[in-house]
Amino acid sequence: MSGVTVKEGFSGQDLLNTANDTSEKSSAGEWVTNGDPVQPVQGHVTRLYRRRWFMVLLFSSYSLCNAFQWLQYGIISNIFIKYYGVSSLAIDWLSMSYMLIYIPLIFPVAWLLDSRGLRIISLIGSGLNCLGAWIKTGSARPDLFGVTLFGQLVCATGQVFILGMPSHIASVWFSSTEVSTACSIGVFGSQLGVAVGFLLPPVLVPNIEDMDQLSHHISIMFYGTAAVASLLFVLVIFVFQDGPPLPPTLAQAKHLSNTDYSYKLSILRLLKNQNFILLVVSYGLNTGAYYSLSTLLNRMVTHHFPGEEVNAGRIGLTITVAGMCGALITGFWLDRTKTYKQTTLGVYIFSLVGMVVFTFTLDLGYLWLVFITAGCLGFFMTGYLPLGFEFAAELTHPESEGTSSGLLNVSAQVFGLIFTTAQGLILEKFGVQSGNIFLCCFLLAGAIITAFIKSDLRRQRANQEAENTLLVSCHYVDIQYGSVTQHP
Image (cartoon, rainbow, N blue to C red; front, side, top):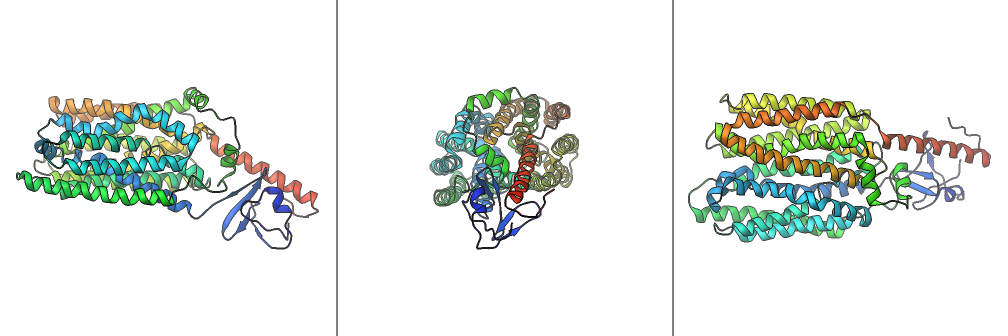
């Protein structure tokens, strides 16, 4: 195949019709131009674009901002209870609104993602996040709890357009050897937002008695958030794209060529997929426990360590930062080993062990020990989040990743609402340890359910079949054009 060049946008046959330039051909049958690999397959060419990293990082950034707004009330709940003069349940609902709104809206949003693409979803999600942040800037007065609730509801609506996107961005922009890493980076943004949500509010809003000074500190937090959200929204408007001109993988190229796609039929097929349904339940149990733990962490820590609001935030930060490390490590591990079932089950079991250890060390009176056990818990429990997205994409290919991850998140929000409400009541009536044991029981159930999931890696199989077809096609082309090159 000497004397063939590859140009962006050429079909497989076009590759054979150009004979004046030179190109580099890899041992796998790929042609390389300017460091970007492309492949001819059934009239299409696949290619990786360097801008893919900027797309996933931009998404992670506005996901970070939205996740920060989820927790900016809960981690200093005792301060906002006093400031607005409302009950602890009312402040809990500022966080739980994110879970409640997601449930009815995810299906129309998933349909919009499938029919209109990534850009419109990104614009709406980042736009609502920005709008909600600005609404909350007008609520820095003790008598304006209704305004802050409305702003939080707008941000919660924006979250519906954000939460299920990481696996979809990974499949649309990244190669088969990068999808797990890219999905982890996408989830990383949300986790970093949670980390900032644990860290900054206790620092920005001290527990003081002077209401005027308290209003000033709250206003600084709200205006700072709105400024960051505005900058990210502008970047999305001018930079974010639907997808690359050419698909990154053979499986994605085949998916794009499918003109018979039906969102309704896709949902029905997913509901008939037993392995996926088991994953939906187990993912919901784990992530719902994480949501409950994050929402009620301030009340847990200050119950055993009164006056330690700042350290409660730092413990939450420890949980999340450890989880981000866990997510990135598991992402790299999956890209190299493809051991989805084994990795998911192992991380789930360690999440259960971490929760048990955290439960029985919280009341020993050693704050440094709580930091260590919380970090171990976070490494696995938070690190589990991208695993679920990627395992679902494998089990459900060629269904849309937006649909499968949306169903996972519905389960997480439902269990998150149930666990947060129930654990909050248990905390008040029976104590912190009983509330955490409640979560441990459901994590045990989730680990058992995960063990029954069969490792049916459909996406990996589709990529392998497409590569085999390509090798056969290249062998045919070599014979047709008189080349002596032989492909295995």
